[in-house]
Amino acid sequence: MRVEYPSPQGQVVALRDVSFTCPAGTSTALTGPTGSGKSTLVAVLSLLRRTTSGTVRIGGHDTAGLSGREIAGLRSTKIGVVLASFHLETSLTAAQNVMMPWFFRARRAPRREAQLRAVELLDALEIGDLADRSPHTMTGGQRHRVAIARALFSDPAVFLADEPADHLDEDAATEVATLLLSLPSRFGTAVVLVTHDEAIAGRADRRVDLVGGEIATPTGSAPRLAPTTTSSSW
Ligand SMILES: Nc1ncnc2c1ncn2[C@@H]1O[C@H](COP(=O)(O)OP(=O)(O)OP(=O)(O)O)[C@@H](O)[C@H]1O
Ligand SMILES: [Mg+2]
Image (tube, rainbow, N blue to C red; front, side):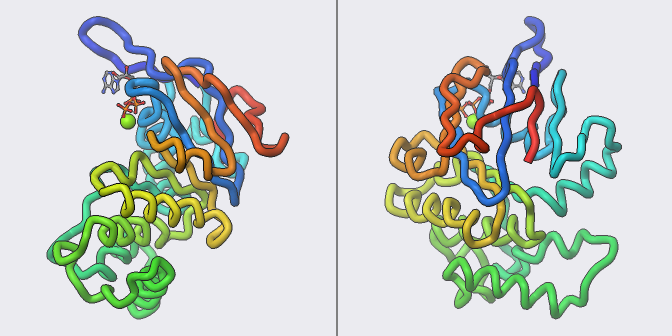
């Protein structure tokens, strides 16, 4: 794929010839220097930004020809995203934040079921006892867990995290990363984690290094993990 941004000085090429696959049940650490295209790749994989050329496939289905409405549907069911500036609603409890996707659904399960799922997810992330508290009474690490639970609420096929531990101290950042790296085996999701931390990157199933908008050293722990196509899919 290729991704360009328009700018007054002309087109900025953020990604070129990038081929990227994230298989279910595996974690990928996305690394590279500042400006190398990591956030752009996350934005494209989460269908927040369209490619200039090349396509993103989800479960083998090409998303290129989809309408805005179809893209929104896929985003709310298949994709979980935690960005550095995740927004939690402080006037709501942790559980209500987690079940936020439910409020936006056209066809809803009963509210009670959504509430139960929210509390179960918070439990799974070891903050079940905070379900009725507002995020503004929580530590940074706890708030991250609420944001992760919210992103997991819709049972996404892929979970994308862009520098999720940016504002945390080292211990809390390691904890959040450990949690994210445990998602593939616990929930079967594919996880893509942008990180500048070498130790964390080394613990992912594989590592993809971007330099100047290109993949520098794709390494796969198994042949099936190697990028194989000119497009991106999971
Ligand atoms: N909205 C935009 N308009 C123009 N250029 C942009 C825009 N967003 C990003 N870029 C450029 O695209 C390239 C890739 O940016 P990107 O944010 O993907 O990098 P990154 O690897 O996430 O960097 P960082 O580690 O600093 O977060 C950079 O050259 C950046 O300046
Ligand atoms: Mg970035």
